[in-house]
Amino acid sequence: MHLTPKETDRLLLFLAAELARQLDATIFPLDLYYRDLSHFPLDSRHKCNFDHPDSFDTELLAAVAETQENGETVALVMIDIDHFKSFNDTWGHQTGDQVLRLVAQCMSENVKGRDTVARFGGEEFAIILRRTTLEHATRLADQIRAYVESKKLIKRSTGDVLGTITVSAGVARLGERDTPASLIQRADSCLYRAKNTGRNRVVGEDESDLSEMDAA
Image 1: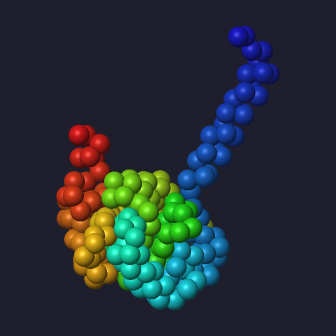
Image 2 (image 1 turned 90 degrees about the vertical axis):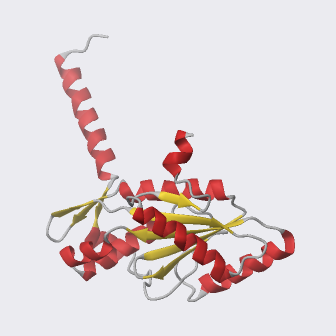
């Protein structure tokens, strides 16, 4: 295929515009994002859209009851933002709050309507996944991990490039004899193993992180 100089110029302009569009999709100007997500409260546990206080506790109790009644498969994902204290110390608590909302939005965009996403405390979040196996929950958690990592953060008001943030996650499956507390404890143990073995990874309660699973 032979292009004239004018056609070549048009093609190059098109490719440059398309590249800019794709790059722009991965960049989050935090000041604008903060305004868009300002209705997400950060002071308690909430249902998927963060608009029903205390719904995490209610939903987890319901999931335990349903599992005991009909054997429904349920998994719990605990997610923690890596090095969040350092990020807060560097960029300030207001920017840190914006990052919390960004992570919450990334999680909400990757779950289904039957699932529950909640802020569990500090920089930690929880996701109740109904009718989801441990393997599928672990892969979903890794999908969220990769999605968060792909976002390039820029502070719109100053133009400062904040880089990227990462998260670690632990995943546990609800067993027949589980209580909400025992399920949270196991998922939390997996989360701490993920953070203690390098961060920016997912560990399931089978004690195999996702990279080890894929290598098998």
